Length: 386
Image (tube, rainbow, N blue to C red):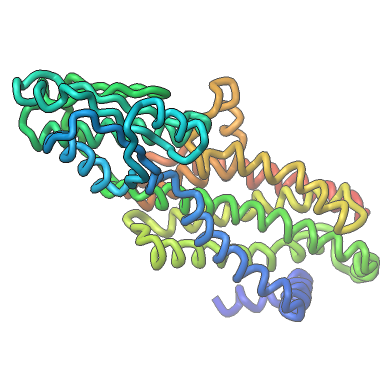
């Protein structure tokens, strides 16, 4: 082992590696940018991209004015998804408030609501939704359906208790389903977001820092100084990439630690498999950054070019939104995105405790991306050095 280490130290690559490491270490801003912003972004995105909706402003028209109708309104308010904003005397007043943007939803309880309940007949109520924000309206309709279903179960009259009529969405159930939530019984949306955001940060930071480091060498003219040394172009390229790869790989640990401490992200599977996948993701990001650097003469040009590459990679990855939500013709593009494959591996390992026997297609795709992207970018960089 000692002889192997001595052989590595005797190689010209080792001094170049140490030189790059010292250069990075002297750049305090770069070191801070590798630690602080990714951690903050992970925490902020984990909270900000939460798809759950709470505190929707609910207006009520209670024509029944009975105990049963008040119980229904209380069920909406107790869910915390809705908060009672105001009571109205007529549906017209409720509609005006919805049009004015004072309410997000309106509940209309008919005058015969209590009588129908007493006769054990279906008692319809109407929910009016402000569907300008279609996503929020859809979620609100879903929440209302769950509230009605829960109320029916509590009344033990699932077929003849209360039915819901929505405007701007529909929610009506005549069958009772027993739903089992596997791997995420608490429906923690942050677990889905955080696992995807880690992949985004690995690729984007690898791309930005990789391109910036190489272009800075061009601007400073130190590339020409390195060419005066006996080192080969391949050794120079490897020495440039290796320290960045080591430092960026620490972001995997930072991301998992932040996810575990802040969002209670479970660590159920093989961390070695996840860490390896993360390193492949970092290599893919450095490959993209190096490739962009070969077309750039300044850091401004590199940043501008990365603007046209990194946002589409993030948006078309399924890291923060389900791939199934994309148009069907767009979904195949996620197969060519390393972030998408890393997110699948992270969710499989951390939430399902899946192993390589299940995740090998995604792992193989990451290996392919790392080889191809680093290979092409190194070839172009060597060509420029030559």
